[in-house]
Image: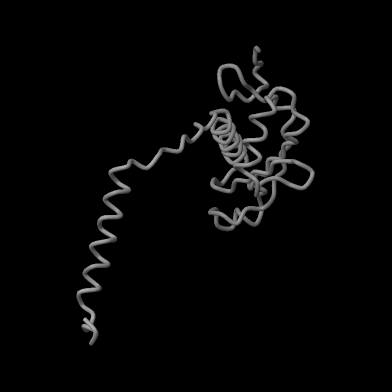
Length: 146
C-alpha cells in the first residue's frame, strides 16, 4: 500500500486518508486571555471508523475496545484538543492523538499463558498453615478431660 501526502501515516504499511477525517472548531477554554473569547481554537476530530477500508478489522476492534468512551453510538471516533492557542496546532494534536491510538491498536497483545503453581510452593503454604494452626491450638486453655 502506498500512501499519498493526503494520508495520515500510522505505520509503514498502514495509513488513514485525511479525506475521511472531519474537523470542527469551537471556542476553547484553554490559555489565551481575551483571545479565547474571539477565536475558535479548540479542534474536534470526527472519524467514521466503520466506513474505513484501509485498516484491518482486527485493528478496528482493538481500537474500539481500548477507546470505548470516545466512540459514539454510530461508531464514530471523537477526539478533541485545546492544548494550544491556535487551530492548526490543536488540529495537529488531534492527528497525533489518533496516530498514537492506532499504533497502540496495531500491536497485537500477547496471549497470557497461565502458569502452574509449583509443588514446592503449595507444600510450603500447607506447612505454614499447619504451623499457624498448631500455634493457635497451643494458646488455648487446656480442657478438663486432657
